[in-house]
Length: 178
Image (cartoon, rainbow, N blue to C red; front, top):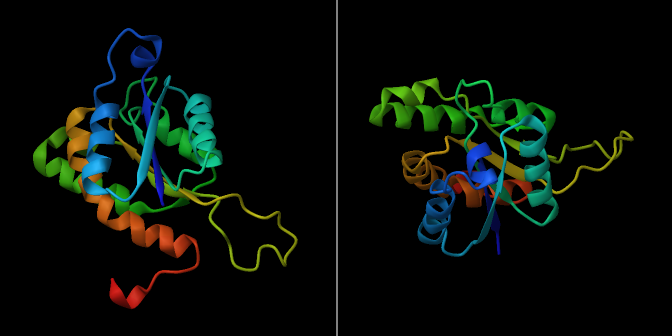
C-alpha cells in the first residue's frame, strides 16, 4: 500500500503560535483522492535543514510521496525550494508548472510560487555497475504553498499522477496505457 507524508513547513505552526489548517485538510484530501493510500503528517519550521531533514525522515519511514505545504513564497524564511536542491532531486518540472498554471487561473498570486517537484534517490540505470553507491528508496516530493486553497487545489491535481509515477520508479508502469 503506497504511503504519502504531508509535511507542513511553518515557523508559527511548529512553535504552536498558529494552528496548522492546511496539513489536516491535506490529509482529508488524501483519504478522498487516494483512498487506497496510507497517510501521516508532521510540522517542521521553515528552513533548508529542517525541510530536507523532514523529507528524508519521511522517506526513511517508507513514504513514497512527500507533499510539503509552505515555504514556497518569496519571504526571507521561504526556503522550501532551496531545500529541494540539497536533496539532489531529479526534477519533475511539469508538475510544478501544472500547479502554478492551474493555481494562477484561480488567483494571480499563484504565479509567484516557487514550488518544485522532484524525485529523491531516483534509481539510475547502470549506476551500481559503474561503482556508484546504491540509491536509497525513491521518494517523490511536491511543494505546495501552505494554504487551505493550495491544498484544496493542488492535491486533487497531483493525485491522478502519483500511482503511475510510483509504478515507474519501481521499474513498472505501462507507458502505453497512460
